[in-house]
Length: 300
Image (cartoon, rainbow, N blue to C red):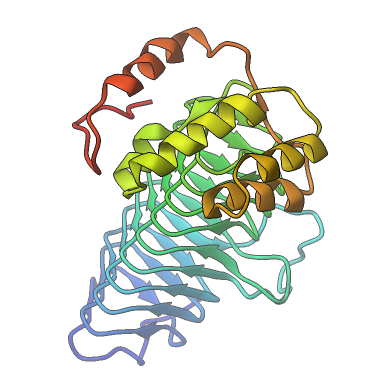
């Protein structure tokens, strides 16, 4: 069992009931609450707070200013039959300024060359999960119960709503949004809304506006979606259609690159949005422009 660490710098607060490995590296201002276990080579950046009853297993690196709530388990072994006790792993890397809420789980990588990676300012809400070898970009939100299977990739500023299931090796593009209870066994392109099972229901206009995308760029993406992505075409036809639609435009190029590099199928556009989304989507055209359109616009 690990014991109270000796590599603790002045200015670190550790509750007497916490167990900290002597291989832990704790920066200035780290707080470790009651009942926590810090097991093995765990590196906590400046100001990291582990509030209580959390289990952290190395190799694990957590960036400055991240807060970890009770009962989170970070760096534990992958749920994979090929992983045996004691197998080497690059572990988990979590960025700066993240919020890791209760009962979140993040599993260690199985590949020797790259850790499971959570970016900066990621908000993982209660019960969300990132499986082994997952890569989650900066400013992503995983809402309660969102489940990312092994080897999944989530692009920056994507929103994965409550109880969304993402298949192994699945990809969610930048600024995409997966609606609550969606099941994604196919890849969800950037800027799109995914819902139901492997379906797209328009664009994440609210998310794009709040990220600061220009009005003209959003208008262009909406037109391209209606003309090209909305039709049920082969991947090659989608790429050809996008290349003709706006040659050289960087956001269209992002779609093209996503379709070219996918190793799986891509979500298809539904002919009609699901009933629970129709009223919300009709409101999008009425929203004022700007990075903040008011509260509750994207509450799904």
